[in-house]
Every structure is written in structure tokens, then in C-alpha cells.
Image 1: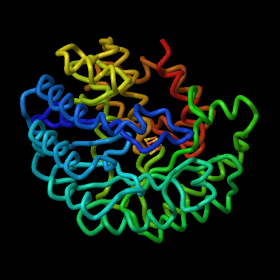
Image 2: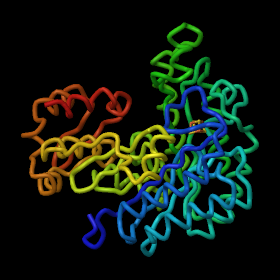
Image 3: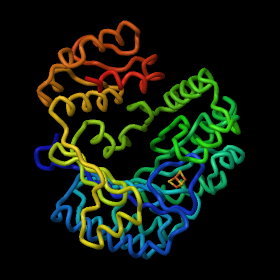
Length: 379
Ligand code: SF4
């Protein structure tokens, strides 16, 4: 951990989207662009109350769709964030973008405000799959977005989803090939999940759509690992792949269980061992901040043991795993004392390797990692 800067990272949430995609349960408000000015005023206020201006090594503006903001509003947002959190030398500044509506003017504004990295929500290059996901962009918009980003920014990442209802392995292979043809610097791949409260959840409950077969989903993930590996990407976290020098440093700070600032509706921060989450309702967050009230909906102070358990799970998401000695020095807990029995069980099952100084996932463990974590978090 850096001795000079702690926290080293800050996150800002932008809750606006044109519409809500069927599978999305992120904090957002669709079709309410009339709230953008009030949101910006509230965000400036929240930032000013959060901390005195101080440099950070990584900034991340996510959403929602940050690039949905009109150009002047986008410039105001970026200016406010940079004033509060000036970027340290060689810092990383990521902004999420969607292919629909992304234009040269907005990308110029990003570049002029020091953005170094754009994470583009491509999801798929297949028109039918995009329609199933209720995305509002066409496959051609992705190539255009990558080209715009590449002209002005140091790093372009693509998000891809697999496992949509009716999707075949051939469709997913074509998605990976199309993504690789655009030579992104970074790729994140996620299996579709059905979250309670989403349209997809309701359709699934009523039998109108069906989950993909588990074996097929597994093959899709394996295909991504292999194809991206052959193309020279380093698989550095369960869902993330980077060309050399293009890992997402901001997310690496999360996986290292370090502290970070956060602002905006639904944003979660982790400061001085305390986790706070803002109200997920944009209008509630907005009213509270503008009334001078706290926007925090939930907060908890983690015990040293809970912090250690969380740090272990976050660290194990990284392919390099967790160094036993470093972990003990940082958290005050030996891994084998903390979770020895569970660890042995997963090692016997071939899901984790615990030899030598490190603990890490095996290839088999990658496919079932979400089922491993609860055992380490439970006391
Ligand atoms: S564009 Fe992204 S954030 Fe917006 S509704 Fe769709 S999935 Fe959610």
C-alpha cells in the first residue's frame, strides 16, 4: 500500500441512462434528464463535505451511463471531480461509457479533463443478443466508440456478457472474435445474472425465458479464458483480462481491500474501517444532500476479523492469489488460523492451491469461485 496516499482511490456514481436494460439492477434513474443539473449541484456539495481537496492515484466514474450527460454537464462533472481529487502523477482516470450516444465531442471532453481510460459497455456484437438484453446500441456503434476512445485516451476496455437466454457457443465465439478484432486494451466478461426486481427476473420467474444450461455457460467462460489468453491478454482477475500495462488499477485497489472514497447515489465508500452506502434512490439522495442531510443509508464498522475475511476473498479473486506472510502482516490473521479447515477442503476438491507462500484459485476453482467465497466469509 502506498505510504503517501491513503485512500488512493475515489469513485463517483452517475445514475442516468436512457432506459433501464432488462437485466440491470444498478443504481440509476432512466428518462429523468431533468434531474441532471440538480444531481450535479448535489454531487458538488457531497464532494465538498466528504473531504478537503486531495490527490488520488485512481479515479473511476461509473454508472448508469456517465457519457449520457450532455457535453456541458459532463464537463462540469469531470471538473468538479478533478478539483476535489486532483490526479497524482501517472494516475489512472476511468470513465464508463455506452456505445449509444458516444460522440467525438464527449470523448474530447473526457480527454481534456485528464481521463486516461474508457470502459465501454459493448456487451455483444450480435444484433439479436443486444435486442434480448434490451441494449440500445447497434454492433457498429461499438467499433465507432472504440475508435473514438483510441484517438484520445490511453486505454480502452470492453465489457462483454455471456449466457443470455438462447445464446449458443457459436454466438459467444463470434462476440469474442469481434471484440479481439477491435484490439481493446482490456476486456471484462460477465455471465448474465438474474437479479431480483429486474424485468429478466420476472420473465424468468414466469417461465418466459430460461437460464442457459450450466455446462454451456461454463464452456463460454472457458472459451473466453482461452481465446483472450491466446490473444495475449493476461487473465488477472476472475472476470478481467488485460494487455500488459493495462490492468484496471482502480479495481486492483478494491481487490487489495484498501480504502476508497465514493460519492453519488448508491455509492459505497470504505474509510477508516467503516463501510457506508448512500441511498440508492437518486431522488432521496438528491433531496438529502441538498437539504444538508447525510445521504448515507447504511453503515457498518467491520471488526478486524471481518476485514481480514473480506480481504482474503477479494484477494483470491486475483489470479496471483494471496501471499500468506503479507496477509498476516496486513491483517494480523494467519490464513490457516482464520479459515484453515475450509481451505483444506477446497484444496482437496482441487479448487484452490495452498502450497508454498501463496493461496490461489485453480482453473477448476475459477468456474465455481462464487460458491467458494461464502465459506470464507462465514464465522
Ligand atoms: S446501460 Fe448499463 S447501467 Fe444503463 S440500464 Fe443498461 S445495463 Fe444498466
